[in-house]
Amino acid sequence: MALRILHVTGTHREIGLQVGRTFRRQIQDFLQKYDKFRTLLLPFLDSTEGRKVYEGYLKVAQSVYPQYMEEVQGTAEGAEVSFEHLFLLHCRPEILLMLKSKQENVDETSGCTSVFLNFCNGPRLLAHNEDADANVQKLGYIVVANVKPYQLPNGDVLPEENFTSFCYPGILPGVAYAYNSHGVCFSTNAQLAKSLKSDRIVRHFMNRALLTASSVEHAVDILKNTPVGVALGFCSNLATLHGDRGRMYSIECAPTEGESSGTLVSVRGIEQAEKGSVGHYYHYNMYDHLDIPQWRTPSSQHRKARADEMEAAKTVQDVLNFLGDTKDPDYPVYRTGTMKDLVITATTAVFDLEAGELEIYTGNPKTQPEPDCVFHLCA
Image (cartoon, rainbow, N blue to C red; front, side):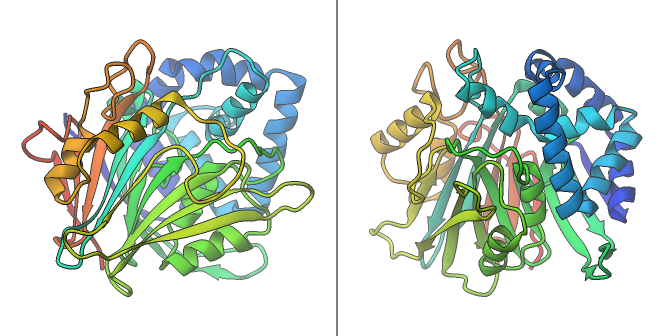
C-alpha cells in the first residue's frame, strides 16, 4: 500500500492549513467513518457534562500550547471541517476512558507494541506496531515539517522545529511514531491509568510537545515542568542517534492525584548489552515501571504472554517475526481485526539506529519482504 507523504514549511498555522488542504478527503472521511466519533464522542459533547469537559480541555490547550492550537485551527480550515469536531477528536483517548470508567458500553482497546534492541555491536533499534482503528491504515499519512520560530504571548520565542511523523487523519503529529532533527526517535504507547483528569492537557497535545525534545532530559523536562500536567497517561519510547548512544529510554507518565497539577514521570533506561545477555525490552499498553492503578486490556496481556512464549529477540528479523506474529487467534501481536479485538495494525516502524534509517511497513513485517518506505534519519 502506498504511503502518503507531505513536506511542509511555514508557521504552525500555515502548516496546519497545508496539511488540511492536502488531506482534506482523508480527514473528512475519517470523521464520517470513525464509528466511535459518531456514536460516542459527539453524543458525549452534546451532554451537559461532556460540554463542560470539552470546554475545560479547550481552555487548558489554549493557555499552555497556543502554537499547537493554531495548527489544529489551520488543519480544520484547510480540511473544511468543524474546529470543534477536530478538537473533540484530540480529546478522544480521555473521553473514551472516561466513559469506560463509568462502566458504559465502551471497550477502548486500541494501542501499540514497541520493542527495543540494544546490543553493543548491534543491532540497536526501536520498532513499533501502530495499532488503531482500521480507517487509520486507509487514511493516515506522513508529515515532514519545518516549523518556523513562534513568539509566545509573553514575548518568548520558541525555536524552529524539524520532524517527520506518521499522523492520524486530522490529529497533531507525534501521537504514533516520529523523529526530529535532534536525532531523537519516538514511539508512543497508550496507557490506561485509572487517574484521569478533566482540567489538564490532553495527551495528543503533550505528544506533539515532545517532538521538540533534544534529549531524554529535555523530554522529561517537558513532561514535568509544563504548567499543567497531563490529563491521561502514556508511554513515550525514545532512542537517540547521538550523545549517549548506549542508552534508550522508556518514559511512562500519568496524572498526579488530588489538587496537584503536575505529571508523574518514570524513566527506565535500556542498557547496552553484550550478545548472550539481555538486550531487549518490550512495551505494551500497560504500565511497567510506574506503579499506579490502571486498566488492563486483554490485547496487551495476550501480546505480553506471546512474547514470553517466544525466544527473546536478538536480531532485526527476530523483532519483525514478533511484531508480525498472528499465532494467538483472538488477540494477535500483529492485529487483524478479530471478533474479540477489532483494532488492526496500521503500520510497523523500525528505527534502525546502526543504519540511521526509519523503515515503514504497511503489511505484516514478518512476511513482507521489503519496507514500503525508508527515511534517512537526521542526526
